[in-house]
Image (cartoon, rainbow, N blue to C red):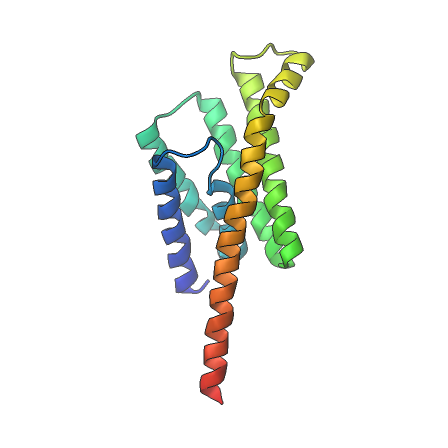
Length: 174
């Protein structure tokens, strides 16, 4: 991995940390998009830990909650980073959008299952699970919109900067 990509992932992760600390619409977050981005552009999978460390640091300020539910958030985000690794193999706009939407679905399914299974808010029955998922739909909408928004910003800005950089190098070589 180029050193600049590593520095970029670190910088974006710091922005992620700060974004969690300012008031925002629930579930409208760059979290999943940052992990998807890191999965695509990190040469070493260990660099996927950088955004997760930023998340942990922000949790130090925001406070912790039920461990099993918190772990489901971290696990789902780590899986989203691995989705980025899969997207990297055939990176194109359709796969990036699909990865972003898949990330929202993955996060929704994993974290709400954990809320139902480990939390005390819903009965541990199929109807309780259905209620949990149905009441989470407004949050899913915010997650999906934020994933598409932040993914567009991160990937679009990076690819545009890369394109202009390559054009500049090409122009110098003429």
